[in-house]
Image (cartoon, rainbow, N blue to C red; front, side, top):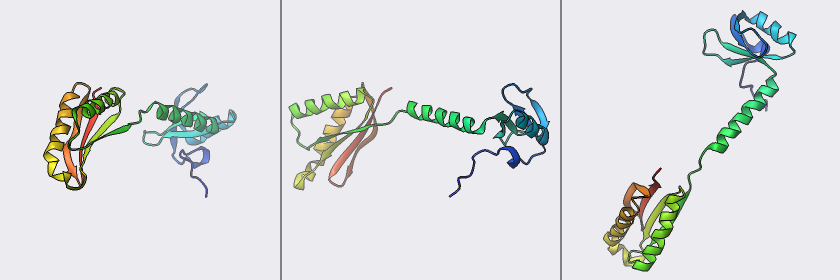
Length: 170
């Protein structure tokens, strides 16, 4: 399996003239043959950077080094991206006050550290008849945590679970 180069280099450039940039080169528009000759004199490659420009922009560089630096930049950008973490908290339809407060403290800490929160009430067996209590419980939680998070999805019944999503406030 041969990997196709992502840039046109040297002889693969088939346009009549190109804008040439690079270190130690007078930037300007040159015929492609002249630009290739300039690159060969420096024992470097002519690499097409943007095809869409008029004329296309080429740079005289060492192609392997150019690819290495591009990969390095991509890696740095990827490292700076934030990963979204989803934390879950489970309630029963008749969760008592102490358990509720305990889980609310955890939910608050999750939102403060920047994680998303999935709070849900799980209905076992016949407890599904208390779905209004479950909804009240989740709405109460959302109201008490509105200083640190905002509701992304209001309580919604999915099978035996009533789910509510919250995201941290920036």
